[in-house]
Image (cartoon, helix red, strand yellow):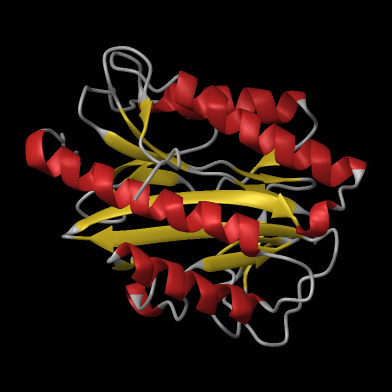
Length: 255
């Protein structure tokens, strides 16, 4: 395992990329409305990414065909923009955005409800997932272990009656989009890396209303859905490990 420690210019490079990614995600969350297709969302995201002077970290990554991931309802992650998938009022829309600039990458995600038409279930699911991310970030500090992050996330999710996806995890993120270490969103047994000052992690709980099990679309080989068709939500922040509380690099500020 090769875990990068960021400081100096490299750290500043990641900070800039993270802010650009946060900017795009914030604008998208304000833009998405019922009646848009997920392809519309992807095309608009491409325009926002160009505004930053960066490029999509996702497009053509291992062949991925979209600029972002736009995942609806039972789609956990990796939803590809399509002209025939029309966003309806009340749909859970999970937006995952990565921007690369000057060789560094920012990565963040958020789930919203289209048109603000919440059900009790969608409201509880989104709040639980968002708060689980906060719990994970609270545990992400030097001296703790990676496993402490997942344990904190899972405890909160299970206490609220939901389940954590176990086959998809968070990751290191900086020079490359996916770096060591993997960051599970559940309690793991056995050795786990110690968190050290200068590590940068993308912490991203994916929470299902039903089973934690998932399946990958057999046709496009990308779209990940809940096994039982239940709703799913996804939140992600990129954080810097410090000796105190983690610094969230993807709080949207100014590009």
